[in-house]
Length: 136
Ligand SMILES: [Zn+2]
Image: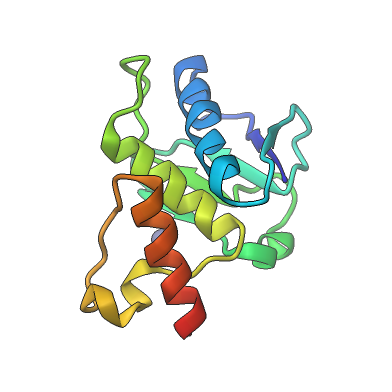
């Protein structure tokens, strides 16, 4: 799946882009999927870093309905400081890319007691999202 950083006000910095590129590799270890950063602004996943908009992503193929030039994912909590992503930033990136490949919300899993939690490791994020997905 291709992703791009959407040009404009919320394009983010090289540091933010590097954090995303590094963290998404985690998915490739466990899921049969490859995320590729491209310059093409019509990429399937179009990322912005609007700090006031939180973290969200259009789940799975619903991203195809988003109009061209608009974001399909926002990673507001991923900051431009520090080269190394924090555990929380990793959790947000893994979680939102989980949505991008069509996984459901962790809080939809009965094992999460209806609580929204940002997992800190891929296994936590992946398993809880996967469980939510299979129970939906
Ligand atoms: Zn979510």
